[in-house]
Image 1 (cartoon, protein in one colour):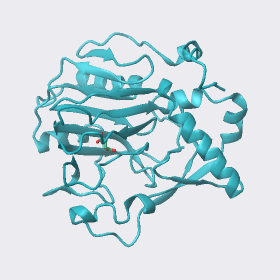
Image 2 (cartoon, helix red, strand yellow):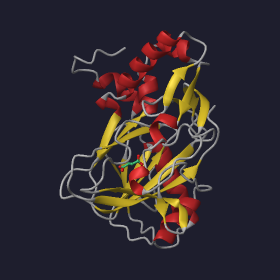
Image 3 (cartoon, helix red, strand yellow):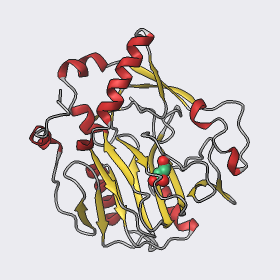
Length: 294
Ligand code: SIN
């Protein structure tokens, strides 16, 4: 395991950075060797050919989160882009755009008591079938700040000791939306539901596309590891959350107006920085359904 006080851990993670075959229809500019890439050469408001779509899929699989700049999409086009990757998800609590329940509103301004996604999480991991991906389109940015941080849970898993990997294999944990969602959107006029989603998921999941293992516990939703005493669960979760938040596994995206981030919730956690009050940051998120974690 890593000593966070030493500055020479980089070479230990060299194997996490992979360079695949070249792309034909899009360009790739990696943010870090481990996670994140900016995609160029594509206008998402135009119909996308199969080749381009395949390459976007591949770029997501290889980089875990991908970014597009200077995109000009209508709400319908944003939704249509999401549908190319699967059925769309309706958020169990957050407000949505009028007439589009699948278009989640992401907005913080001078009157907001909170902003979305301020703690590390994987989107709606409390769902029995959690989202595979989220496509956030930010139209209005503050003059500075409002970055989003993304962390690779492949890298977090790989960096665990073999002993800890063996201990975690086969364990499951409860993910619960109650604490996160109850009362959270009252300020936006959203009434609470009687119940919020709750699910049991493996602590280590295997990605259905890449076949790689990823750590799948997050501060936002994971409440308890099953089959071990409560105090052991709390201590192990605290260790895993701290471990997962190591900057070595992260990239940080600096938004500009009309940028899009598309992240893979199966292998990525993210955290939004609300450091721009009293300025406004706003956009919409389209979330794509996934499959049951295994
Ligand atoms: C979220 O979807 O968790 C919000 C992310 C962001 O606003 O950057």
